[in-house]
Image (cartoon, rainbow, N blue to C red; front, side):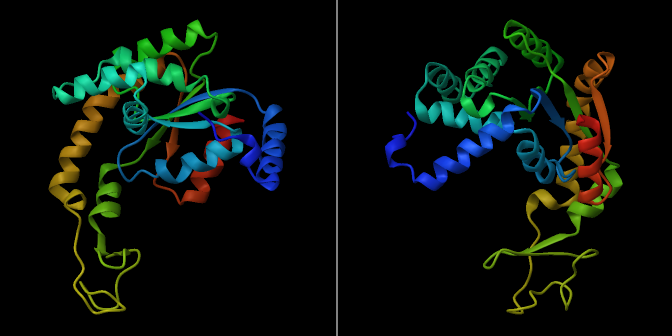
Length: 241
């Protein structure tokens, strides 16, 4: 249940009303973001969300929220998870369907991490069609694996402070040690070349058929994700205008 409006500060209410008035003139958009880890999806999606007044639907987070809120679908999802099974496609599409009815999703959504298979894409299309909607654009953050490898495997962190370094783009003053404390830097397991290689292989195998499915419908925009974030943002806005 939403917070009692009487308890919301006037300024917050005014900001929200102004935001909704500004948003009312925006066209509805239903977008899908596809891109491997490190492709910059996470940088661009908040910008797209704010520009077009969309809600950001990350299916993993939504499943966890539905389970926590003990919604009908959440209870079913929890049963599957407890058995160590994958949550069925119908359930995930149902949770997206539920989310779309919220005021924050009135103008549409950005879907991130779904669909991962052609079957999921078809089920999503069927659900949207029932609501008289459809996927408008699929933004494919296309980037060469070698560039990604350089971006990701160069990351080193100082866990106590959260400071991050990059061997090429933001190196520490002395190799392998934190600038401030002189303590050793570590590399996250996910950032090593071996882990990245298997993640990318899985990603390509899984998403290529989905990209193909939407390409046949003429919905895919290939973004030059290796470019600096500002240039990628410009390309996104151009693609969505």
